[in-house]
Length: 246
Image (cartoon, rainbow, N blue to C red; front, side, top):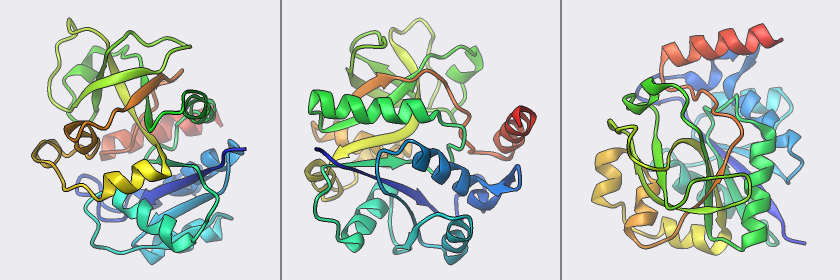
């Protein structure tokens, strides 16, 4: 049976909202919310990968597992690969990289991505959700993804591009990109040994490194479009929603 390891990169020094992993929603840090969502999928072992002892201590205090990594990484993917090597796990086939600022991500969507990766024997996979708010097309904090085919509940289409900047709604097959990636272990190792591409650096999107080096990315349709926490406004909006639901 194929095995998946879930790794969650997290750091305190995000430029737009420093310290966001430890911001509280319902008296629990954002990073611990993400850990719990990942753990509840029962896909496999879950570990937070961080350069900050404060994040590690918070995760462990709340019943999670965390590992310290270097503070020299240029991307979250580089961070999770270091963690994977440090953990010395020999029988893992896939690694799921869940962004530490997606506390509202749907557990069923995480499971769906993992299932699609295994079913189709894909090398890299991610998720996209339908865009229902027109403001998302011009919000540079929201990453948009264009796909080869219109997404549905059954397909695992190829990604054509990722963008932060303004996108016209008239373009076909545009979705809200959700911060999660699945990799075959060998593909992840190949990816992190590639140099950062000009496209990646200019757009602040590490997934462009894969496309720029002809590594195909498949994408599944997510049922929900969660709010990622990039700004203080995002945090306050999500806090209000999650605390209201409770």
